[in-house]
Image (cartoon, rainbow, N blue to C red; front, side):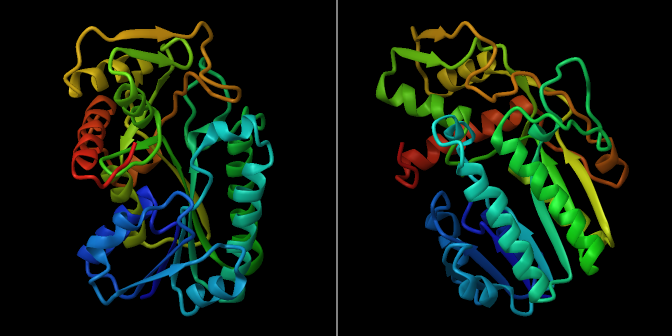
Length: 320
């Protein structure tokens, strides 16, 4: 079996590849343009002759088709990692999201790829703190262009599966965290406190409340449903079932960095940026019925992530 991972040098992609190699997978191709992916994510794995790295952009069709050749299962994990970037660059999620997803699925169709796994996110449910969304719930009113792009990707995959006989899975992740992440709220707080350990300015009022899932738990889901096999098109939520606030994350970062007397300044609005969804509640019961479960709670996942990022900074792997 040949597996191709688009965004293979990214945070989730590199963790997935590491797990697949440990499980004895056949040939794996990591495809990445390194706009946000990091070579050090893959360096411990490149000695394995089963792993091939293609450094190219999805718009480079010849390179993309080379990666697709003979692929049995395709993971499409590439996207714009900076969700708030669209506030100043509104086209970024179409140019680096929807359009690229179309190019990936078209290349997969032409290469006769059998199965596609697509990474979506909880933002597709929209902004409604009064509801807990399950796998079947869907909001037609995204509040960010990032969420709109993910909705478009889900719809495209469903259509390609129906029209061209491809098997497809969509995963709607909670906020994924872990030792090798290179963006996100914990990363941002560490960066700010390294610049000024006496002050932390927080976007929003700190009451934003969401599920944070450890990348190992995400990979568990990606591997579990790959092993089970699937036909047609299906979708799963992956979340922890519990939630933490931005205030709690700030406290964890300050504690793990060993800081005291930090003046934390919060904003006055619930949203950290235009398009943010401050409170998200959604369920992963469908995935749990199929055999998946999370090992880390939201607070445990975040603390492990903070410790891992600080360790990588100390080892000079991660520059902030």
